[in-house]
Amino acid sequence: MPISLTALTDPAAGPARRRAAWLAADDDGVPVGSAFLTLSDREERRRVAELELTVHPAERRRGTGTLLLEAAIGAARAEGRGILLAVAGEGGPGEAFLAARGLRRVLVLVEARLPLAAADDGRLTALVERPHPGYRLVDWDGTAPDGLLERYLAARPAMDDMPLGDTGHGAVRWTPDRLRAAAEAVAARGDLLHTVAVVSEDDGAVVGFTELVVPGGGTGDGQHYGTGVLPAHRGRGLAGWMKAASVRTARRRHPALAGLLTDTAEENAPMRRVNEAFGYRPTRRLCHYRLDL
Image: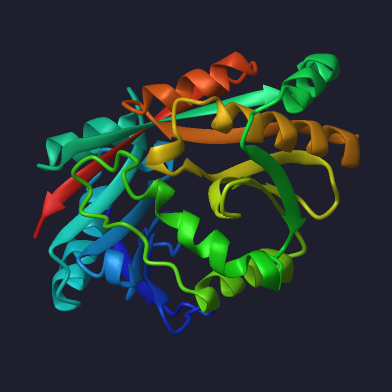
Protein backbone atom coordinates (compact mmCIF):
# COMPACT_ATOMS: atom_id res chain seq x y z
CA MET A 1 0.00 0.00 0.00
CA PRO A 2 1.57 3.34 -1.06
CA ILE A 3 2.50 5.74 1.71
CA SER A 4 2.50 9.50 1.21
CA LEU A 5 4.22 12.12 3.35
CA THR A 6 2.81 15.56 4.07
CA ALA A 7 5.10 18.24 5.48
CA LEU A 8 3.57 20.19 8.36
CA THR A 9 4.18 23.68 9.71
CA ASP A 10 5.32 24.19 13.29
CA PRO A 11 2.91 26.66 14.97
CA ALA A 12 5.19 27.02 18.00
CA ALA A 13 8.44 27.96 16.25
CA GLY A 14 10.55 30.39 18.25
CA PRO A 15 13.65 32.48 17.65
CA ALA A 16 16.02 29.68 18.73
CA ARG A 17 13.98 26.50 18.23
CA ARG A 18 11.73 25.14 15.53
CA ARG A 19 10.50 21.81 14.24
CA ALA A 20 10.11 20.21 10.86
CA ALA A 21 7.29 17.66 10.79
CA TRP A 22 5.78 15.07 8.49
CA LEU A 23 2.57 13.05 8.58
CA ALA A 24 2.57 9.67 6.85
CA ALA A 25 -0.76 8.42 5.45
CA ASP A 26 -1.94 5.45 3.39
CA ASP A 27 -3.71 5.85 0.06
CA ASP A 28 -7.03 6.28 1.89
CA GLY A 29 -5.61 9.24 3.75
CA VAL A 30 -5.48 7.42 7.07
CA PRO A 31 -2.53 8.59 9.23
CA VAL A 32 -0.09 5.78 9.95
CA GLY A 33 2.97 7.59 11.32
CA SER A 34 4.67 10.90 12.00
CA ALA A 35 8.09 12.42 12.49
CA PHE A 36 9.22 15.61 14.21
CA LEU A 37 12.70 17.01 13.74
CA THR A 38 13.72 19.56 16.38
CA LEU A 39 16.26 22.16 15.27
CA SER A 40 17.86 24.45 17.82
CA ASP A 41 20.05 27.44 17.02
CA ARG A 42 21.53 27.46 20.52
CA GLU A 43 25.32 27.27 20.42
CA GLU A 44 25.43 23.93 22.22
CA ARG A 45 23.04 22.24 19.75
CA ARG A 46 23.75 23.84 16.38
CA ARG A 47 25.32 20.64 15.04
CA VAL A 48 22.43 18.43 16.10
CA ALA A 49 18.95 17.62 14.78
CA GLU A 50 16.75 15.61 17.17
CA LEU A 51 14.22 13.20 15.72
CA GLU A 52 11.02 11.82 17.20
CA LEU A 53 9.53 9.16 14.91
CA THR A 54 6.37 7.12 15.46
CA VAL A 55 4.63 4.48 13.35
CA HIS A 56 1.36 2.84 14.33
CA PRO A 57 2.08 -0.72 15.53
CA ALA A 58 -0.23 -2.22 12.91
CA GLU A 59 1.58 -0.39 10.12
CA ARG A 60 5.17 -1.31 10.98
CA ARG A 61 7.50 -3.24 8.65
CA ARG A 62 5.90 -1.67 5.58
CA GLY A 63 8.47 1.05 4.91
CA THR A 64 6.72 3.94 6.65
CA GLY A 65 9.44 4.44 9.22
CA THR A 66 12.13 4.38 6.55
CA LEU A 67 10.32 7.05 4.50
CA LEU A 68 9.98 9.28 7.55
CA LEU A 69 13.61 8.75 8.53
CA GLU A 70 14.81 9.61 5.02
CA ALA A 71 12.74 12.82 5.03
CA ALA A 72 14.24 13.81 8.38
CA ILE A 73 17.79 13.05 7.25
CA GLY A 74 17.31 15.17 4.13
CA ALA A 75 15.94 18.08 6.13
CA ALA A 76 18.74 17.85 8.70
CA ARG A 77 21.38 17.92 5.97
CA ALA A 78 19.66 20.87 4.30
CA GLU A 79 19.90 22.71 7.61
CA GLY A 80 23.63 22.02 7.76
CA ARG A 81 23.38 19.66 10.73
CA GLY A 82 26.11 17.08 11.15
CA ILE A 83 24.36 14.79 13.64
CA LEU A 84 20.91 13.21 13.77
CA LEU A 85 19.81 11.99 17.21
CA ALA A 86 16.84 9.77 17.99
CA VAL A 87 15.64 8.17 21.22
CA ALA A 88 14.07 4.74 21.72
CA GLY A 89 13.13 2.58 24.67
CA GLU A 90 15.68 -0.11 25.37
CA GLY A 91 14.77 -3.47 23.88
CA GLY A 92 11.78 -2.11 21.98
CA PRO A 93 10.99 -1.98 18.25
CA GLY A 94 12.30 1.58 17.95
CA GLU A 95 15.76 0.56 19.09
CA ALA A 96 15.89 -2.31 16.62
CA PHE A 97 14.71 -0.01 13.81
CA LEU A 98 17.37 2.63 14.49
CA ALA A 99 20.20 0.12 14.85
CA ALA A 100 19.21 -1.61 11.60
CA ARG A 101 19.49 1.71 9.75
CA GLY A 102 23.01 2.49 10.81
CA LEU A 103 22.47 4.62 13.89
CA ARG A 104 24.69 3.82 16.88
CA ARG A 105 23.83 3.95 20.56
CA VAL A 106 25.70 6.77 22.31
CA LEU A 107 23.88 7.40 25.61
CA VAL A 108 21.46 5.65 27.95
CA LEU A 109 19.24 7.65 30.30
CA VAL A 110 17.67 5.84 33.25
CA GLU A 111 14.25 7.24 34.12
CA ALA A 112 13.16 6.80 37.73
CA ARG A 113 10.17 7.69 39.91
CA LEU A 114 9.62 8.36 43.59
CA PRO A 115 6.03 7.73 44.81
CA LEU A 116 5.53 10.55 47.30
CA ALA A 117 3.31 8.40 49.47
CA ALA A 118 6.37 6.26 50.13
CA ALA A 119 8.60 9.19 51.11
CA ASP A 120 9.45 9.26 54.83
CA ASP A 121 8.81 12.82 56.01
CA GLY A 122 10.67 12.25 59.27
CA ARG A 123 13.74 11.00 57.45
CA LEU A 124 13.55 13.90 54.98
CA THR A 125 13.38 16.38 57.85
CA ALA A 126 16.35 14.76 59.56
CA LEU A 127 18.37 14.99 56.35
CA VAL A 128 17.42 18.63 55.79
CA GLU A 129 18.27 19.60 59.36
CA ARG A 130 21.58 17.73 59.45
CA PRO A 131 24.35 20.34 59.79
CA HIS A 132 26.61 21.02 56.85
CA PRO A 133 29.21 23.36 58.37
CA GLY A 134 30.06 26.27 56.10
CA TYR A 135 26.89 25.99 54.03
CA ARG A 136 23.23 26.96 54.16
CA LEU A 137 20.16 26.23 52.04
CA VAL A 138 18.09 28.82 50.18
CA ASP A 139 15.13 28.32 47.87
CA TRP A 140 12.82 30.26 45.57
CA ASP A 141 9.97 29.89 43.11
CA GLY A 142 10.31 30.92 39.47
CA THR A 143 13.17 33.22 38.52
CA ALA A 144 16.05 33.56 40.97
CA PRO A 145 15.75 36.71 43.11
CA ASP A 146 17.81 39.67 41.93
CA GLY A 147 20.16 39.35 44.87
CA LEU A 148 20.96 35.75 43.94
CA LEU A 149 20.68 35.74 40.15
CA GLU A 150 24.32 36.42 39.32
CA ARG A 151 25.55 34.01 41.99
CA TYR A 152 23.14 31.36 40.72
CA LEU A 153 24.40 31.98 37.19
CA ALA A 154 27.96 31.34 38.40
CA ALA A 155 26.84 27.94 39.75
CA ARG A 156 25.25 26.71 36.52
CA PRO A 157 28.55 25.26 35.19
CA ALA A 158 28.15 22.62 37.93
CA MET A 159 26.35 20.59 35.26
CA ASP A 160 28.92 21.09 32.50
CA ASP A 161 30.61 17.77 33.19
CA MET A 162 27.46 15.66 33.34
CA PRO A 163 27.71 12.63 31.02
CA LEU A 164 26.39 13.37 27.52
CA GLY A 165 27.93 10.40 25.75
CA ASP A 166 28.72 10.99 22.10
CA THR A 167 25.50 12.90 21.44
CA GLY A 168 27.25 15.99 20.12
CA HIS A 169 25.54 18.20 22.69
CA GLY A 170 27.75 20.84 24.23
CA ALA A 171 27.53 22.41 27.66
CA VAL A 172 24.75 24.98 27.99
CA ARG A 173 25.96 28.57 28.18
CA TRP A 174 23.64 30.36 30.57
CA THR A 175 23.04 34.11 30.73
CA PRO A 176 20.75 36.11 33.02
CA ASP A 177 18.26 36.52 30.17
CA ARG A 178 18.30 32.79 29.45
CA LEU A 179 17.71 31.93 33.10
CA ARG A 180 14.76 34.31 33.23
CA ALA A 181 13.34 32.99 29.95
CA ALA A 182 13.53 29.37 31.17
CA ALA A 183 11.63 30.23 34.35
CA GLU A 184 9.08 32.28 32.42
CA ALA A 185 8.48 29.42 29.98
CA VAL A 186 7.58 27.11 32.88
CA ALA A 187 5.24 29.73 34.35
CA ALA A 188 3.63 30.41 30.95
CA ARG A 189 2.38 26.85 30.72
CA GLY A 190 0.96 27.10 34.25
CA ASP A 191 3.57 25.05 36.10
CA LEU A 192 5.71 25.94 39.12
CA LEU A 193 9.53 25.93 39.08
CA HIS A 194 11.01 25.52 42.56
CA THR A 195 14.78 25.74 43.10
CA VAL A 196 16.78 24.77 46.17
CA ALA A 197 20.39 25.97 46.31
CA VAL A 198 23.38 25.70 48.61
CA VAL A 199 25.21 28.90 49.57
CA SER A 200 28.76 28.97 50.94
CA GLU A 201 28.98 30.82 54.24
CA ASP A 202 32.54 31.87 53.40
CA ASP A 203 31.80 34.11 50.45
CA GLY A 204 28.06 33.89 49.76
CA ALA A 205 28.59 31.97 46.51
CA VAL A 206 25.93 29.59 45.27
CA VAL A 207 27.77 26.27 44.94
CA GLY A 208 24.95 23.89 44.06
CA PHE A 209 21.30 23.76 43.01
CA THR A 210 18.44 21.41 42.22
CA GLU A 211 15.29 22.31 40.26
CA LEU A 212 11.83 20.75 40.40
CA VAL A 213 8.85 21.53 38.18
CA VAL A 214 5.38 20.78 39.58
CA PRO A 215 2.25 20.70 37.38
CA GLY A 216 0.06 23.74 37.86
CA GLY A 217 -2.78 21.77 39.39
CA GLY A 218 -0.49 20.20 41.95
CA THR A 219 -1.47 16.68 40.85
CA GLY A 220 0.21 13.97 38.79
CA ASP A 221 3.98 13.79 38.84
CA GLY A 222 6.57 16.54 39.25
CA GLN A 223 9.73 16.52 37.15
CA HIS A 224 13.27 17.14 38.36
CA TYR A 225 15.27 19.34 36.01
CA GLY A 226 18.93 20.14 36.65
CA THR A 227 20.90 19.18 39.76
CA GLY A 228 24.56 20.07 40.17
CA VAL A 229 27.30 20.86 42.68
CA LEU A 230 30.46 22.74 41.71
CA PRO A 231 33.47 20.38 41.65
CA ALA A 232 35.29 22.04 44.57
CA HIS A 233 32.30 21.35 46.84
CA ARG A 234 31.50 17.75 45.92
CA GLY A 235 31.84 14.81 48.28
CA ARG A 236 30.17 16.64 51.18
CA GLY A 237 26.61 15.38 50.80
CA LEU A 238 25.29 18.63 49.33
CA ALA A 239 23.34 17.02 46.47
CA GLY A 240 21.43 14.78 48.86
CA TRP A 241 20.85 17.71 51.22
CA MET A 242 19.29 19.80 48.45
CA LYS A 243 17.28 16.87 47.10
CA ALA A 244 15.85 16.13 50.57
CA ALA A 245 14.76 19.76 50.93
CA SER A 246 13.20 19.75 47.46
CA VAL A 247 11.28 16.51 48.04
CA ARG A 248 10.08 17.59 51.49
CA THR A 249 8.87 20.94 50.17
CA ALA A 250 7.03 19.29 47.27
CA ARG A 251 5.31 16.85 49.60
CA ARG A 252 4.22 19.54 52.06
CA ARG A 253 3.15 22.18 49.53
CA HIS A 254 1.45 19.81 47.09
CA PRO A 255 -0.28 17.03 49.06
CA ALA A 256 -2.11 15.77 45.96
CA LEU A 257 1.13 15.30 44.01
CA ALA A 258 1.56 11.60 43.23
CA GLY A 259 5.27 11.31 42.53
CA LEU A 260 8.51 12.82 41.29
CA LEU A 261 10.30 11.87 38.08
CA THR A 262 13.97 12.10 37.20
CA ASP A 263 16.31 10.89 34.48
CA THR A 264 20.02 10.31 34.86
CA ALA A 265 22.73 9.08 32.52
CA GLU A 266 23.50 5.43 33.17
CA GLU A 267 27.15 6.27 33.80
CA ASN A 268 26.37 9.04 36.30
CA ALA A 269 26.72 6.70 39.28
CA PRO A 270 26.97 9.40 42.00
CA MET A 271 23.65 11.03 41.08
CA ARG A 272 21.95 7.68 40.63
CA ARG A 273 23.06 6.70 44.14
CA VAL A 274 21.59 9.92 45.54
CA ASN A 275 18.25 9.18 43.88
CA GLU A 276 18.19 5.52 44.90
CA ALA A 277 18.82 6.48 48.52
CA PHE A 278 15.57 8.46 48.49
CA GLY A 279 13.58 5.58 47.03
CA TYR A 280 13.57 6.51 43.34
CA ARG A 281 13.15 3.33 41.32
CA PRO A 282 13.92 2.87 37.61
CA THR A 283 10.90 2.84 35.31
CA ARG A 284 12.54 2.60 31.87
CA ARG A 285 15.78 3.10 29.99
CA LEU A 286 15.92 5.47 27.02
CA CYS A 287 18.65 4.90 24.43
CA HIS A 288 19.99 7.78 22.36
CA TYR A 289 21.08 6.85 18.85
CA ARG A 290 23.30 8.92 16.57
CA LEU A 291 23.73 9.09 12.82
CA ASP A 292 26.58 11.17 11.36
CA LEU A 293 25.31 13.04 8.32
